[in-house]
Length: 401
Length: 225
Ligand SMILES: Nc1ncnc2c1ncn2[C@@H]1O[C@H](COP(=O)(O)OP(=O)(O)OP(=O)(O)O)[C@@H](O)[C@H]1O
Ligand SMILES: [Mg+2]
Image 1 (cartoon, protein in one colour):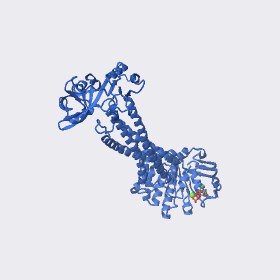
Image 2 (cartoon, rainbow over the protein chains, first blue to last red; image 1 turned 180 degrees about the vertical axis):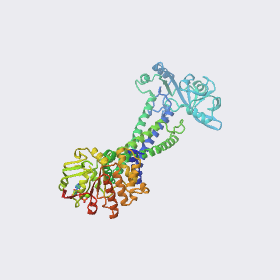
Image 3 (spheres, rainbow over the protein chains, first blue to last red; image 1 turned 120 degrees about the horizontal axis):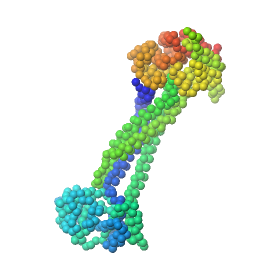
């Protein structure tokens, strides 16, 4: 026993099968459209997860650096090498400007690291002993004493060099103890310790002349105060000319999200165009299907099919095309999305944190969105031919050969 | 039996097809009454309006003027959906070209009008009995129309026309595409259905075929002669 829907569906499927090449091509258009939207969706979702995964959450951070001659905005720009540092006096002024918030002065240099047979220059981040817990967490081991021969090692560097808490390395030609290994932190605008060695100010000044600071990191725990804090610092230094640059991570992230949005819209546009083309091709197939069945429509009307039933019959055809195309498209895009993400992750983001290649809820959402659009496009393209079929005059249709 | 009831009544019915080259008067002030249970043959030269007359009775079209009542309903006043329902539930069509639906097999073709009416399918006793009554062997039940001979197709078409137990059967040259012997088989079948109470209106050119009917109506230039 099947209802009207059953027999109409049988009908639609048989007709599509009769012209399987034509139907297949039309459904293929939908596959491409759905796959475009869904794959791009998965890709961009995974990239954003990837990005937020490798970018440490330092939204409460304001970074003060000496104003760069090159003004590229990047404190690590090699052209800033000759820019002046920040002195203890500058630090005092910053501390006064930021009031209750903690200002952490930082200096970064590089030393030769040797461990077993491996050796190479690594970044060395110099922090006051008391400031270390403000910025960093130790995963394994403990904080080093204020002076003495102990250092901390970034997680990825530790992994690569095979270093564990309590082990020993040679840094700058000197044998030192590894007090602890840091937690993985990801990229950020303040410091990037994952591939670095972190030493105390005491350790550094015991071996080198007192340095000027590269930058001062201010932890503004109340995010609403960030603009005020920035203004206070600018007021202190930049009255007459630019002496320091003040950046907060939101600016950097915002730039990322803006770029991301623009790319998403662009990619979605490509998917949309693909679906539009698919829609036109389904429209075409449906119009042909209606035209070549004029006579049959007349017969159906003469044996008692109402207009709405004729319309339904053709809509089912579009529906079957849409469902088939969307299902295949969904499957294809799930695989393609994961593969593309994996390859991008491998080539572009190699070495930074864990790479999501699976299909999160957002990815599933993209696939469903793509499939929804595919189905919608098919139905929409089916409406006009189906309506046209339903409006046929039964006698005209019967006379048509 | 009671007084025979008039099931189809034409009162001054005209049908005009407006064409750019000038109006075509397909039916010209036709008055005609057909009683329930009659077997009427409609005859006349090509272009005389026979099919037009049949299409009007079949509610596929409505008169340009005059009134046509089917089972007491003035079809000129009915909506498209009402006309379709009247056709579906009370009228069976048999065509010269058989007009089976090529994508459906024999059983699906026969039950299609009933699916439309009762919104369910499944070939039950009645449907099988009907196929038996029109003389179609069970081996053919799952065949598609293209795999059947003309006579077999017309038998299926008759079963399809009868499935919703209509009072009226309309046949437009039902034997026109069949050889004489096969045609006689079909005519025997129609005669049998008429004996069971169906009102039959049949268009034909063939006087031998028209002889099966009780009454002959001649059309010339859209008028009853
Ligand atoms: N849909 C239509 N549009 C225009 N003219 C039509 C239409 N249907 C029928 N006619 C015209 O009406 C007249 C009657 O046509 P009809 O089909 O009823 O003739 P007929 O008696 O069935 O002829 P035949 O024996 O050839 O089937 C013809 O002149 C025909 O050209
Ligand atoms: Mg005719």
